[in-house]
Length: 64
Length: 158
Image (cartoon, rainbow over all chains, first blue to last red; front, side, top):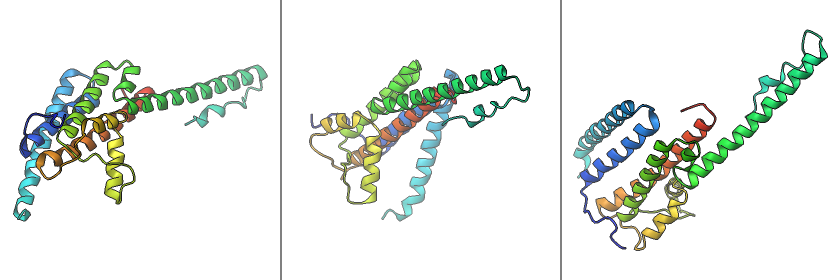
């Protein structure tokens, strides 16, 4: 019961998983047609990843 | 909540009392229906908040209902499994209170997360830190879905 998630995810893997789940939910809630949902989810996922990595690099010089 | 424009036609310029009475009756019916409709929409939103996906299921939006339920459940499962911080009521600062509000957005799944996370949070690693975000995101996403169900029930959004 103590370890319900057997995977030991890295920071980046957690980030990708988070982006994927939220993008799928956004796509389903935000659009009606399956193709539109897929496009919106893909776009949302790409934006999560690109903006997340860009912010990470922007913060990198101040991390230590 | 009520449409005020519906009660403006009671003074009919034609002077025919039958037409005026008919307009008044129709306006009252319209106001009554709008009120019932709003109560139904609010009830759907509350039910959707308590059990994620139920609001959309009541509107027969099956795809969205399943997606909302699975997404919120998966996020809560991952967040609690990663030992994220599940905020308790009566926090010391604004962040703790906001975190509690976000966590409470998962509705009944908040208690599921409490049941899963028996060993308490551990935010000293990336897993635990992300777990806190997963739990908060699950709550905010469920609130967004409940609002979407409310709007769909009012026929403002599909």
